[in-house]
Image 1: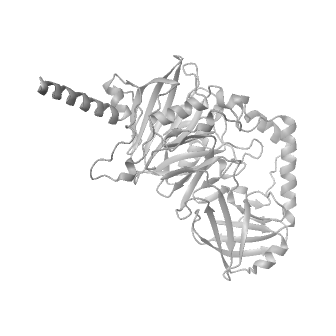
Image 2 (image 1 turned 180 degrees about the horizontal axis):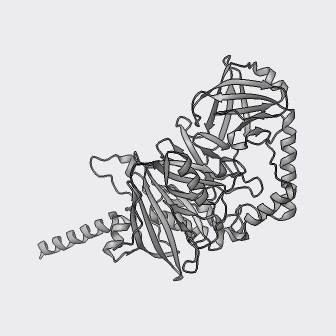
Image 3 (image 1 turned 135 degrees about the horizontal axis):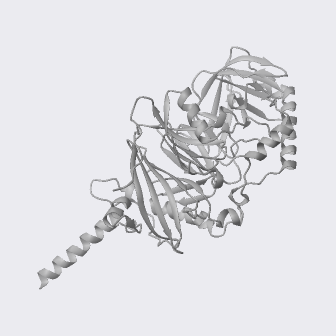
Length: 488
């Protein structure tokens, strides 16, 4: 009798261990592809021979209040190290939402992380299909997957919050306390409240700080302009204001509650465009130092620049592979910079400043922090109630505890799918395995493209123009993109 009891207890313990430690997709297959997500028992010890750091302080298992279960409807290996899943999520109120989820292994991946600024301009806007086709045709890379990234300003079309594209900073200034995801050269992600600063120094060690990139905020500051601003500094669009207003209105946000910033109208657009033109005209008076990069730019790395030209005022053409420093004459004199000199530029992050970053996106709010749903989401006063509590299309990214896995998620809202609130999005990201997660621009901007296939919104739906895109690409001629298939 005692032997039978011991065997019975052992079977129970083995079964419990399998349920706790089996990945979500395996559980789903074992249970007919429907599984409630579980996580390791709090306080579990690391297996022998494994690093304790990876297994230390696992997130608490919190029973989902909003998600009843998740069913894997499609499962496909898109590329080596990249899995696509279509998840049918049944909510606690019995409503159904479809979620498109990419799981990307970032340990020496056979693909690279990149960001795309639409039309390669701060004020550029493109539909995702157009942007991907442009990159595919112009560069020796094939886009495997692409998703919308930063929120953007409705008139200037510039991304909101830090934006870095292949080492080149497009936007440096933070917006409120929004969070960012910075990517290393190998694609390894880091989500945190990053802040960027920039400085230049001459060979004598004299240093001056750059206040902003590609637009002027303070009249007495140094501004760095790069190729994303346009072909000249200052750059003034040739289109007339009334035509620009019509174009912006036609592409503007149609649904108020899906915006984290503001909704535009004709008067606000006209005023903003006039202000942008006035700022550009004011830029003529500043001294401009034209420079060429002697090394590809990156964040947290000193970049040598060769001084090509220096003018006291007026307009200049953007140098090839270069930038323009614009400042008051008194500041320029104090730097003692001459044509032919080498000066040094450095962008620095407030955290992890010894790690070199090449790409960055920004979003709001932070969904998951160290394995737990952000407790501030319950009593959020920074965003509108509609933005937080209306079920909408959503876009989110996340990482696991070791930052060796990147999750890219879009939430569908259609005739078959309700969409998520912000809290439901956070709940899903946590249950899916994210240790850190960040909400990106969503609503009508929610787009996910795999290869040449636009998954969200559906191909027959009108798509909004975007400002900034996060993409995964590989060199042409390597791994073919696998077709998406339904799970057997």
